[in-house]
Length: 504
Image: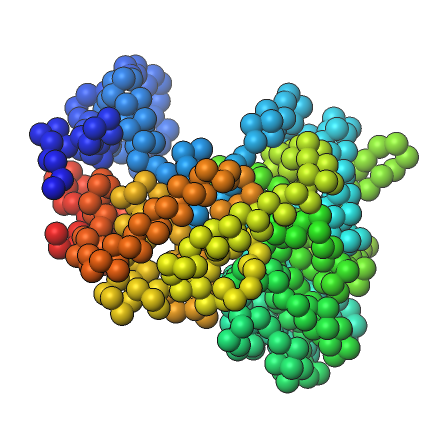
């Protein structure tokens, strides 16, 4: 039985309505003097009250603190989102990013005043190239998909430079990240899907069957989204190159092989690197992000500007593509300095042996979870070890009336953010879990104990328990379809209807 409280609070978690419902438009926490002088707004002058909520400073502070308590965060507990790599951000990195000279830089400063920043970017580029075995890197892309776009535009420019602009077909496995086909299409290519096989991997024969004079590239994630290493990756790269095409590797899962495998040795021509996944820079709301793209010798001349150029003892930025083969530029300025600083700090504090251990521990943690959960859930590729991710599905629990979404909602009541649901699409009812290397065994055991206990409740026939979950969260199950199709993007006074709820 769930205890209902008069206040709406749950223990020490305070109930909190919308700020518009809390504050009064007739009051304000700050006194502003009437504007002096001539009104120059003309027809733009507001004709009706703004209707913003007025709150005192304590009320404002409490509002946002209470909202923060409703957030799940990596600093609160294990964040099992597969494919997203939600891991601890060392505070040493945060401190370095706030050093004077880094935190207060402006992108329009003369290069003579930012020599230290350019040296840092140059060193980061050096180590990214060293770790991946690639001769060049573009630092400016702002995220993984942006880095993908940079790599595919470099491939497009290289093909056009060879007079092979007719190559428009890009091969993409059905297990790929959704950004892969979207990026290829955005770059002007057509997408040809490589079907998945039962073992979750891309097969050389399937690739060869798709090759032709119109193929521009292949896009493969390695390790792939099933949490598996592609054993035929080098042979696939050789076949792609023999056909005159290029090999783009989605580097989202590079944290599983950093320090162990150099993508350049596998025949990769371009690969983006999510700095948040491999080198611990903040993810999501802690961004902005960064997705540097490493390039092979064949694509290096087409890297987007700006380029850092050493002239004598000083570094300069080559800002324009004229006079080079660069395909252009990806953004207005030079990239995300705060992310560069954090990533390089992480590299230098770990060293080569430490980065190798990052990959080893990420894979060890995932395999530990796989070993504990496999007896209780269906693991479609559980015959052998996984890499950095554990892939389960709902085939063993669905016949008993419980689906993936029900398990995810039940996890909310247990105090965990759910795992990634229904991805990769090649596995029906997928439950994708990535513990990362930063979780200790104690935390892995707590999470595994919860998952096993939920599996036991399924076996006990407690279907209604799962269909009602979550019961302890501020909101119950939302009508996701209605929320997507009928979003409320504007608040109006008197329109205080609660979001659509599932039947309780």
